Structures are given as structure tokens and as C-alpha cells.
Image 1 (cartoon, rainbow, N blue to C red):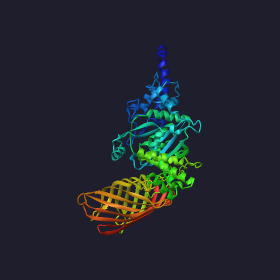
Image 2 (image 1 turned 30 degrees about the horizontal axis):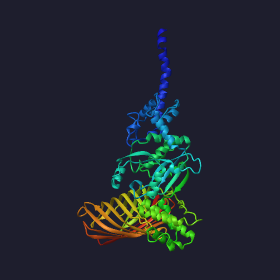
Image 3 (image 1 turned 135 degrees about the vertical axis):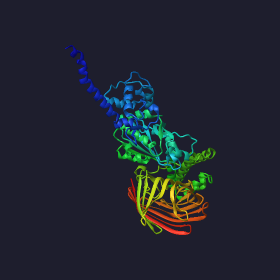
Image 4 (image 1 turned 135 degrees about the horizontal axis):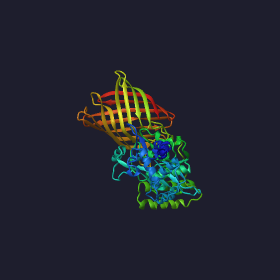
Length: 621
């Protein structure tokens, strides 16, 4: 009887305590693999083998030493830390408020208040009621912005119509690159993760000045339909990652990717990150947010350049000449040619010219001693005209950037090179060329990455890699009396080339610059001076170089796109000969999912004339 009394409590604990511990351990194991927890710590499944690895690269982001690779260890360490007594900025509940809130809800822990001075001051300053996802359109002249850029605007309560969103704060993620790094180094480091990426908070007006006023980029504002609790969850997680290092990768772990993670943290189950495969292009990520019914309203904010160009384009052609003459200082704003105009036409002329002068003084750093007196003179003349409204803002484009064609393209075609028939398959992960459906993309802009063209020749069943495009950028921007942008192109990769005896696959680097001129609303002519470099052991000196030219026409509309012209090159190193080509390419667009295409070239190379044609189908995913 005495033994039973001694061992009775032990036996009772075995029957009751062990199952409870086992249940608790099962709960911890389950929570550590919960998608919401994996999202909060930015875990991703390992590419090879089992397990997870966090994309966070800052040791301060983890509580456990094994937190980088162990969701369970990090959860246990976090659970222990948030239950420690005390308070203040260094307490785990203050450092990781999103984790703390989620774990207490899942485990039904006490939600006793805690003092977190820095976090409370931060949230009070932000004063956020709703969140807006902002998309800045692509800007080819900056490597970091070729695909566009996204960030979040933290909107305060809209107490009345006078509440200015310009003073709202924003959350953005970007590569922390040294200012002295040139564009080529930025591309290299960005592609291979050479820069840390950091999350920062800035006022919205600073973003507008950078993107809209300086870089000439339209802004699209997508108001998210998050609840107040979801907004608070996003801010709590933003606090956790603010200033923490996540290695930046240009194609996938970029600005858009990190914002998707914030939205997933705010609304668990959204799984926006699941949409990302090989790359995360900002316009695609906006499209995914729309498809997930996260967007309540959309607002268009045209750039300063778009607004100025619209005002000038609405002037009659002879008035455009007057505006250019005034801006260039050829005539004064009170010139008799201006004074003779009817009040409304004169007001429109003065308004458009003033806006253009202000734009040039901001964007192109016109000297103050020129821009200021001219602006004052324009305002003085405009003040003499009453009853004429200022110019209207440009209308919203019929197709938003997120409503354009999908960026992944697969193409299948049949063709003939000289007398050899072939079937060609092309894969292009990103992004757009000038003959793709233009709606939602910048006119005359082309940006392609990692495009692969493979051909199967039918006469001998030979499979050949025709071209591998690492990068191809082309920007054709029409010039006029007010704007004189440079049209340019650059590309590198590998391609089939004729060395006089056979077609060999050679690495290449090409570039060019020139001008483009509008021939109508949808057509432009261009002339580009080019330079090519090819490197291969089958070339006589191992490499060859060629200056040249590309002169042609480009037409783009929502149903049909066409490009045609002539190219000429003079190879001057391994072989002294000319390579001349006549080309024509056309796409017929079938909605945003498909395009039929046809291409023809007639080439004179090594005094041999040969023609290539092909026709097929593009499919966009």
C-alpha cells in the first residue's frame, strides 16, 4: 500500500502529463510549418533536399541561432522570448510585434499590454488607416527601373477632401547600392545578389518628385481592400523587417517580391508569393493583386512629362511653333503674334509654355537666370486673362500597365533559310518587344531577358541553338520641337553567324544610338548608328567588329504591329566585307493572349544572297 502511495502521483502524471506534452509538441510542430509562420520569417522550401531556409540575411532578424534554417527552433525561441517578463524597446514583443500577435492568437496566450515606446511612436507617426499599392511605370534609362517599380503608400484617415495624400508615408524595398557604382556594375551585382536590400520609409511627395517629376514615370495607385486589423498586421511586420538585410536579386527577390510578402503577412492565405517562379516583374505582381481581389479602387497620376506633352499636343500646330519660340527665347511672351490671339487660345498657349519651362527647369536643370525671368513673364501675361480654366490633366489610358499582355512568351513557327526548312521554338521569360501587343506598355520600348531560339532543320533532323539573348533593350522615343530624347539600343548573348564557310554560334555584344521621328500617332521612323562585336575561334582573328546603321519604320496599334527597314554593317577586323539586310516583321494580335507573326529577311553576306522567312504563333503566359 505504501509503494502505491509513493508511485501513485508518478503514474497519474504519466497518464495525464505526457499526453498533454505530446499534444503541445504536436501543436508546436504544426505551427512551425503553418504558412503564416513561414511567411513571417520568410522561409522558402530548399531547392535541393527537404527543409526550409529564410531569405532574411540579417542575424538580428532571428532569435534562435538555428532560425535561418529551422522554423521550429525559431518558433520555440520566439515563444519563450515573448513570454519573458519585462518591457521596453529591446523586448521580443516590441522587436517582433507581428510574430507576437500571431502566436498569442494561435496558442490563446494572454494578450497583456506592453510598453514599446519606439514602435508606438512609429505607428503614431505613420497614422495609417489604409494601404495603397503604387506602381511606377518602366523607365529604360535606369537599370533598376527597367521593369517598373512598386511600393506601398500608407494612407492616413481621410477626414475630409482636403486631406493631402502627398504627406503620407511610403514603404519600399530596394538595393542598397553605392552611388559610385555605374550602371553595368549595378546590373551585374543586382543579377547575382551582390547588394543588400533594405526596407525604408519615405514621404510620398519624395517618391512623386523622383518618379513623376524627374524620371518622367506615370504612377498607378491601387487602393487595397485590407481591413484595419490587416493594415495593423502589415505595419507590424514592416517594423520587423525595416532596416534588416535581405540580399537583393534583380529578377526575383526584388522590390515587388518583398511587397508581396508584406501583403501575404497582412492577409494569410493570399499566397501571392506562390505566383512567383523564375522572376517577379512589378507589373505582373500588380496583376496578381488585382486577380486576388485585393484592389478596391485605381487612380492614375500622370507624370509631369506626360502632362506637359499632353498640353502641348492640344495646341494647334502653328501655336506649338509659337510655344517653342517663346521657350527658346526667340520671341517674348508679349510678342504681337501672341497678343493677336483670342483670349482662350492665348491662355492655352501661355499655360502650356509655362508648364514646359517649369518642367525643363526641374528635369534638365535649366539655369535659374533663364527659367525664372521667363516663367515670371509668362505668368504676368497669363494673369491678364480671366475666365479661362487651366489646362486639363491627361486622360487615363484605356489600358493600365497591369492589363497588358503577360510577360512570359512561348513561340512556335515554321520557316525556311535559303532552301532549308526548319521548325523554331522560342522561350522568353520576360518581358516585351516592340511587336508584342502594345497596350499597357511604353510605345517604342523593348526589353527582353534570357530569350532562347532553337531550330530543328527538317532536311537532316539537326537541332541547333539559333540565338540565346542575355539582354536586349531598345528605346525608340520620337523627337520634336520640345523634346529631344536619344533613341538607343544594347544587347548581348550568343547567335548564329556566317564566317564565310559555315554558320557558327558566336557570343556577341551590340549597341547603338540615334533618333526617332513621329510620322503619325502610331508610326515613327528611326535611324540608329550601330556597333557590333562577335567573338569566336572560328573567326580568323578570334573576333570581329562592325560599325553600321539601322534605318526603318515602326507601327504599333492594338491589332497589328509592323517593323521594317534596312540594316548595313561593315566588318573590319577578321574579314573586310559588308553585310546588308532588308527586313520586315509583323504581328497580328489576338487579344492579350496570342499573336500571329510573320518575318522576312533578304541578306547579302559574303556576296551571297539568301532569304529567310518564318511564320507562327506567340502565346503569352
